[in-house]
Length: 375
Image 1 (cartoon, rainbow, N blue to C red):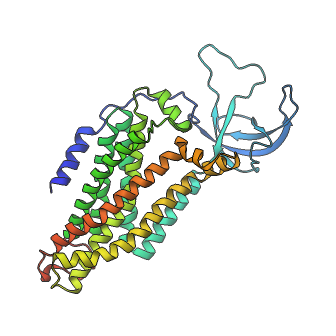
Image 2 (cartoon, helix red, strand yellow):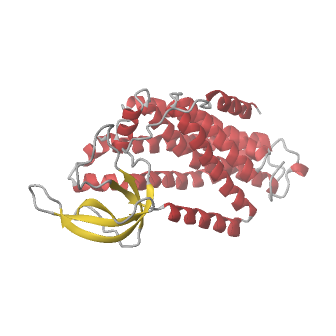
């Protein structure tokens, strides 16, 4: 299939072959960390002209003999950390030739160690999917893992290397789509129709997102992470990162919608092999409209949930609704939501049309019973 060939060629051409040097000594995002365990918590005087209490923890670090003191900050601004909590700490790095004053702390608190919890949650998801969906659940989890691998090994390094974020997002999105479709639906007319629908809609989403970013003047300069990226890589297009995020964010629900429409068309043809392309389209579109309203609702709530802390801050600060919506931190997820919804609305009739045209050509004897992969 031409779309698959284009995707493979795109991966080969855009794959970052040279590793970009990283700022290994930077501590802007925490730097390199080591494991530590909290022994006890103390309340000490912060020092300085204003008298206030600071929270300090004594921790044990594997590579250090004895207790290590780390001051977290004022008690009113820092959370309490119970004894026995596993945390991550980093050694304070000074410029060459500089020395820490006597009595200064040599380690800094980075955060609570959550990696174990994340691992157990991922394992629980895999087991739950395996029990409920059996081998399909296992394939779905495998698809998620491979998709994340594509994002981390291809899309992120390619964007950091200066490759066009638009091309990287499009090619990466197509690759993720093929991984998802092949693992969960196999190779057949249903997957082909879904792939064509998703691929066409992804191109449209990229163009719409490009236009929306230009019209809304979203330059990507929002938040601490964007500032850090701009400082570390002056040639990086922050607006391109915003565009790539929009494409990736819409891909999940887009795939779900396209697969549902292709599956509905196939199910209708199995139920009545006499249905032609026109009647298949009309019947499946009814299903698509019902599913579309729920999917748009899901996409909107997902972005609202991600932006909830920021909305709370703006509300607590007394910012007017119009001014809050105008802030770039809020406008970005709004534009991403609108672009994604436009893509979803376009995907339903497009995928349904393609699926109806393809499935109508399949002889009734080759439709199968709807179980397992179609080959």
